[in-house]
Length: 150
Length: 135
Length: 110
Image (tube, rainbow over the protein chains, first blue to last red):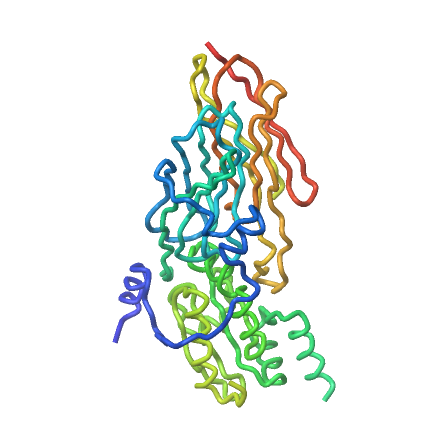
């Protein structure tokens, strides 16, 4: 039998479970948007139109204790003159679209940083809309932990 | 006969779970509507509660399931009535007690956050464990 | 939050011509999604969030951020700008409930 104090310790670990009920779920999430839904709505494209690019760097923590305040920094080794806009999407959020930044030559560099909300573990994705009509993308997987506070 | 029908309509009309903060009142409503209680203990300082409140309890599928089977009682542990403190052993947050109002018994307890799909699976198991006919 | 809309804009004290420098900004704002419930009343808290932030360098629009409820409470934003000449950076921002604010800082190009 665990003492009250032991339970506090377990709580600190972050994933303690008094009741584990693994089960199957066959629900469809109709009211939520997929990444493709969001890409269609904002850019008129789908994931297939995204070109993975190593020129884009997405900096974010590997593990976040809370999805309330996750820092994200996007930079790209692409001349600002060639870029129309930079987008941030969280693939698995109920609404993946987070922000759009219209870039101009006055920026000097393609760069944007902010803090985002995350519903659960998901890729944090940057999409860059180029003036030539192509879409470059890169992402960083951020794990949002489940758990409790003692 | 009119009252249960009316309150049932109220909580279902918006497709939203009915959230109350008064335990005794919630017991009455739950008895009338033939539902169980889901007592959600939380703290404003706990990031895992933030996660539950922003993404799990308001998930459309979770919400639909809860509104059909449970009455929610929301309790801030930093401002908890003594009667509840004595009744339940809440050692952390988020802490959820599933309670059968007719028998006055705890059906199950859950500590810690969950992702929405895992949480629905848990709710379904609890519903089966309870004496509700429609699960 | 009585101070909703208050912002801090930070730039380097001095930059040299041609230098790319960082502009950082924090706005006091609840950034409500419109999905969360008030824990006491169970009522939905209406959406309340910053919709856009426009950066004007010497009256010319140089960057526009389109924001959403997916951005955290008390939002932080950082962009970069290239120093061409001294002048004023004016930041104009608004929310979905009609709130509109602006904040200016000096850019000193040495």
